[in-house]
Image 1 (cartoon, rainbow, N blue to C red):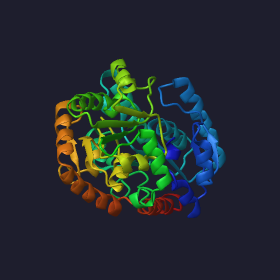
Image 2 (cartoon, helix red, strand yellow):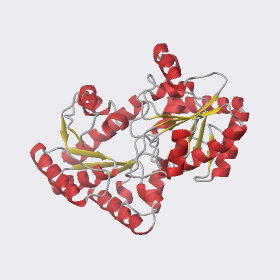
Image 3 (cartoon, rainbow, N blue to C red):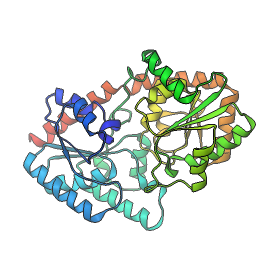
Image 4 (cartoon, rainbow, N blue to C red):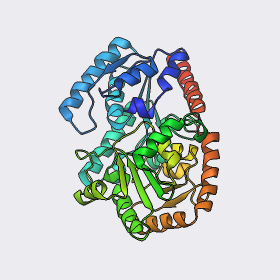
Length: 377
């Protein structure tokens, strides 16, 4: 999923620039599309997102065998588990350039033993890397403040983001009218209704509990409101309370779409994009919503605050504060023109600072610099 949804096009671009690119990930239904789109070889290493010590050890040994055979100049990892195992294996194999991109920290929402364990894992990952690239300035500040990484290793590509935004895809003028009609049918779209859209995993970390509670209260007073949730439940990793799950499944004003690769079409029909997440690195969906010109209401967390400026390009509420969230959402619904004006400002920011091509060129320049300074000494 990371290769398919977080990094699309990046591997193919690097291969066109003269790099021999080998992709490594767990298996998944997205794999055929990834290989077809990126046109780079791929090796399956069955990494998990959970804490699975024996499986992790087997994956570590497999990565060591791969690196010893392939002898890469650069290993670049994304996601916490791939980062831990990939950086450890690359260090053991003495890969010269070892880069880990940090796109969010699970430890931000943990306490007690799990917080200490996740902190240790992050420190071990960063200690094994030669470069650590948080994908937002606020995340970089957090890592520095918590002393998780040696300051000299910390860097960032451009103004943030892991892969930038495909401006051609996320462009209201480039959408297929036939697909718009298809999505309208799926939503039973009605121009007399007001649609709130949230895209992401349906888990507690994404603020879904607060979102559902706030929506239910607002919808009681405004029956024209609809909430569209695009994303899958993950009961084994971060389950929602049964009452929230039941509300999502039974409330006729809540429309649940299990998953979609046509998110730009949902955004084109949404009146507001709501994103109450508890932790992020640099959320792609905010860039996407910004590019599509959808007014944004989001939580004040790392990543979000690098993209949205409160009352300038969107509205920001304190994480987990349902009353403040409700007040801001109510204000947004009553002041559509102000929200539209801020959305236009955000759209210009995204189009100027986060074009995918610019991110790729910056990444390419960093790769070449590291190769020249480290490998070719």
